[in-house]
Length: 364
Image (cartoon, rainbow, N blue to C red):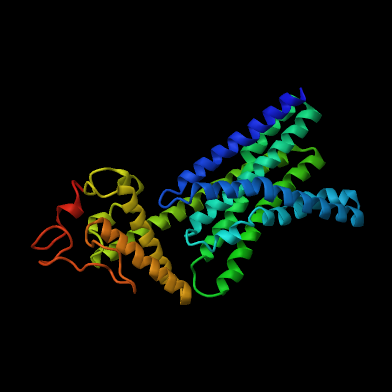
């Protein structure tokens, strides 16, 4: 019987979290993070975040119990200690990832934050499922699976994602002040969500009143919807940034204006026929997207960070032009753009100017 409970607990703990993770990863549709890096962050949440969180929680709750008594520890542990500790141990990787160039904006912060939160929830859920199954039976275990999969897991996901969102807000902003405001604000959001859920569960358990927990479930649906709305807002801002930056690039002759009106749209950019045959579509879309992101980031940065971003802008701009046939050699040292445009004007369609069929492709 114990082995059966363990198998059910592992399946119920792992499969839904991977499903959530896959959906959240799919949402990042304009410039997805490396899947293996998202997987590593997920594993950190499952192993490092949960492991360190458990050890620190146990030590602090024991200390509270030794000073104030076990009854106080039973309240303070889940409502104060767990949110304060776990919302740090979960997001440790984000403080390294945020300095990677691929960490572009708020969306990336949400993805990484959600990944580590879901990893943590997976480990915690398996532990709870086994404990309830062995102590209270299969019926109670299946109720626990339902509640924790639908709500408790989303608490960890939304809490960590909210901190990741705020780190993304700060990523390429001007001034040191952003690091003073954004991370603490994200941390406060995370522990508030976590403490609210744990507090309602603890109070409901002590009072024996399930209506309190039912109300918390309804409130969590609102929090989940809000987090989903923030994700959609972040994706819309990505879309707008790509469109604005590529339209500027089109005015400067980097790419056709028609392409600047296709690349920012997820469905349009996946269609065939808008790009000339022979141009690798996935590579071109990625180069154009990163060009837009880096140009936007450079406009918000300063000093050495801005200089580094401008180097990226030059590199991606050259790659876009190279793919369109505007240049035929790598940029020379010093940041040049390669070969000049051919005689007769225009960039790649034959004498007489214009973009030509090779750049425009088929039907737009």
